[in-house]
Length: 263
Image (cartoon, rainbow, N blue to C red; front, side):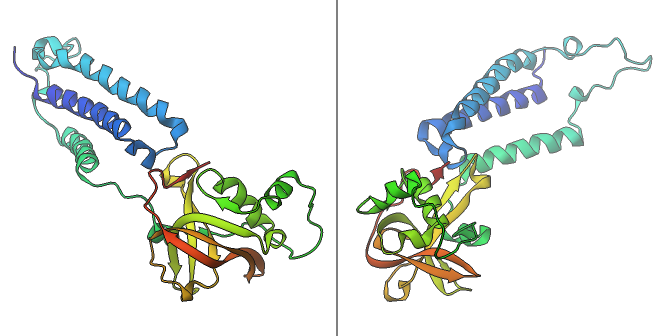
């Protein structure tokens, strides 16, 4: 009985994948990659990798004769891949090893200003009219209008942002408080406070933000997380009316443990 090196490598890779996913869950870093609603899928994947590892272990110590079915071997002998590493197997194993090394060794970075500008910041996806027939009886609009301050924090960002971006003129003059990171659009010469919204995983993350009308007066550095208070304004851009904020005060805050907004 000899040690089957290729089978041993497969077992180690399976164990490392199971361990990697487990570590991500233990540290909470898994939410930097996928929506919390899908955490159970990654947990199941970790368990499957672990089960496959236990199935793989006995194969490490099997003899070549026991490992292979020789029924269809030719009269001139057998040429099983286990006897040596083929180029195909080396490439496949190499790719998995590189993936694991990157996962264990590379630091995780949450998306910020650079990614937001590359992907594009969404201010509004609607055609607006500054006046006119907006259904002010809408329950959501009335609910927000009755708030003394509109707070766009982790819990209220998605609902409030969607309505404000759809009907910016309705909320003009309202007090607003918002948390996010600063991004600077050099082409438009304006600063924005934004956050990433994730639907399934960070691959589909989309940055949504509000323009800061008086950002030149403020010392707001790019990628800095801040809590801003101000007054909602309306800005016309590309024949659309989009929300903007005239900042009255701001304070720097630490990057939240969960910087993404999960839809």
